[in-house]
Length: 416
Ligand code: UD1
Image (cartoon, rainbow, N blue to C red):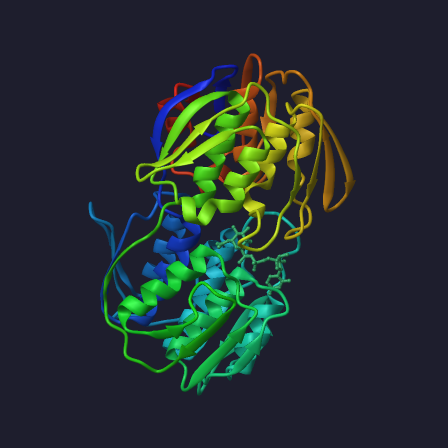
């Protein structure tokens, strides 16, 4: 099931439920390590990255069971803090186990974390913040060893609001001695979800949802029952899928509050969007209007939806300018879209000009990373004829079942 076949040109109709958030589930699952009791995490998506996180937690000695109600994690028996190389390589979010494990076990050995092949993705901000909190790092045979005899609070200012670094600081901070004041924190809703989970467990964190977090460390944490919010990136993918392919859809449980910049972009593209208690209704324009888009840290437009908008604008009315400000090397999808007849000029590693064409043609294309892969599926829905998207394991890292979800909306999509 490495490919997806799409018969394009069918307008989307109907409703689809939006899965739980990948980027919230992963740090929350990592945080269960700090609890030392059983926690129940509901609404985690059944995706490859969550399965990898579960195997990592198991390899560290946690008992993890996926029940009907959610994932039950009991971390009372955590024995070791050495992470299996293969699991870490495949998933950058294994990095957030670093803050949790150093807090729990005082020593961690891990390989340089992997993740999507976008940009260099350094981890300097994680390391310098944790150093300020009393962690020493050494490198041995390609592995990173972190040791801390006494984890303590610190005043930290992040020069860039890194999501992962903020999460690591929060995870280490709740267990550290004293207070941690973090200026320049990432404000992404997934950081807030992590803080809310920890607050439920008994942690004391102030400023949740702002760029200044104060974490009062050293409180005992208790197991809890927590529901992961819906995935704003998956919701956005289906929303732009509708704008590109046409039709009107209801995205059940889509988190409207967290999607302001996304809904604004959809409206600029000519879509009509209405939020209700059921979710977000989207009505597509006859053809998307061109757009000027810049990605930015939250509450700005999310980098994870940049490729999907790019794909939709290949059929836009006129020229769209798209600037990528978070990751370099995030335009790899362009080469594949060109096989479908798209006209895109990459003027720099962070900017493209998309010349909208009347129609795309189906083709054989290859996903090279998660979000670019989802963008190719959307392009396939918009194209005339049949499209085969290869490399789908990348897509399954973040989407439970993108084919099933678009089929719910009337598209002709099959896994092959
Ligand atoms: C998280 C999300 C990812 C999303 C990204 C930005 C998860 C599992 N992944 O990734 O889907 O695209 O936020 O919203 O939640 N940087 C450094 N040094 C560091 C850390 C980061 O220079 O130590 C740079 C990165 O190279 C990148 C930028 O900061 O250019 C943003 O990275 P960051 O916010 O840390 O993203 P992730 O946490 O990796």
